[in-house]
Amino acid sequence: MDISIQYWHWLVVGMVLIMAEIFIPSFTIFWFGLGGLLVAGLMLLADISFTWQLFTWAIASCAFTFLWFKLIRPRMIDRTRAGLAREAAIGETGQVIRESNHNQRGTVRFSVPLLGSEEWPFLCDSAVSVGDRVTVAEISGNTLVVRKT
Image 1 (tube, rainbow, N blue to C red):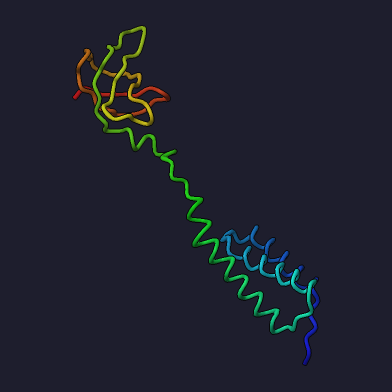
Image 2: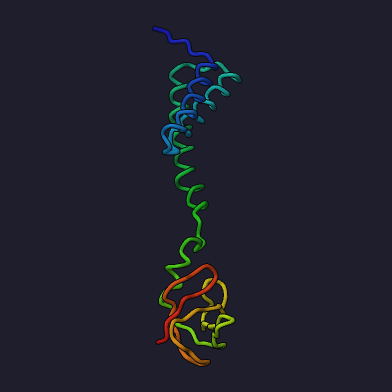
C-alpha cells in the first residue's frame, strides 16, 4: 500500500499539534507540531517518501524538544529574589540610627543591604533609642515592623 501524504497534510498536523498546546500546557506538544511544520517545508522543496517524512518528523521533534529543555529553558529561569522579599527580610538584625516619634518613623541600618538598601524606615511597639539592635518581625508596605533585641 502506497501512502501519498502531501505537504499540506503535515502543515495541518503541525498546526493542530501547536494548537493542542493551548489545552495541554506541557510545552512539549508544541515541538512536535514544529517538527510537522518543518517536514511540510521540506516537502515543498523536495519529494520525499513517507518513511523519510516520519523519520524527519521524529528526529526534528526530538531535537526541538531536547534544545528547549536542555538549552533554552534553563536560561529563562528567573534568578531574582522577587517575591521572596518577606522571607529574606524577617529575622534580620539592624541598628537604629534615628529614633521614631509620634510624627515620623525611625530608621534602621543593616550591615548587609537588605532587599537592596542598607537603611529602612521602621515601626516598633516598644521604645527604642539610637544604637539599639532591632530584629525585623514583619513588613508593612515599605516599612519594617521591628522588635527590640
